[in-house]
Amino acid sequence: MNLIHLCSAPHVTVYFDSWNNWLYIEWEGALTLTAVQYACLEVAECFVKHAYPRVLNNDVQITSLPWEVAPWLAQHFFPNLRLAGIEQLAWVHAPHVRGLGHATQVLQQLPHLHVGLFADMEEATIWLQQTNPAYAGGHTQLPRPLAEETLLAQAVAQFRQVLAAIGVNAEAAAHA
Image (cartoon, rainbow, N blue to C red):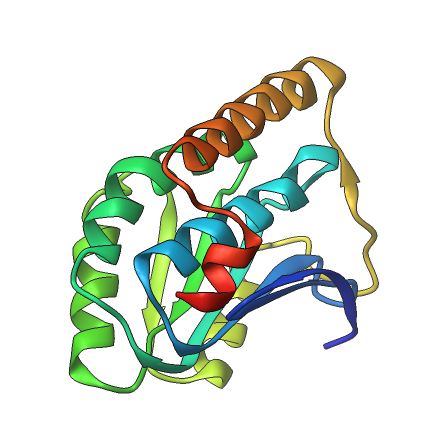
């Protein structure tokens, strides 16, 4: 992997892997719903200027996750992944049983994506590389057509307003 840092928020760091041409999202720690909501907003911001059709999501370092996160992700965040341009998602679930259960629950809500659920990074990486038949490594970030960029920017701004209305911001996420 050749990782270029794109953004960070409490409990999540987002990178562009220029060798594999995908977004790499790394989660860590004891998550709360507020922390996940804010982190998802920061992740969504990464998609406004560039399309990342393939995503490697790593939950291995998550130590706890409350039950209300999975339904929120399934209902409010993941339905917008198609608008973001995501086509393939390799999801490395947290090693504890609850992590697998949360991932499975959310994935049932994503019939439009090609999703792989994995217990380790190596398997996820191999699978995601194989989902791109033109894989040759050394790619660059893909620009998004202006009309799609505008639609996505509006959706992210609306998402930010909704979260602000319920009190989700960087400070709340850091102290949650």
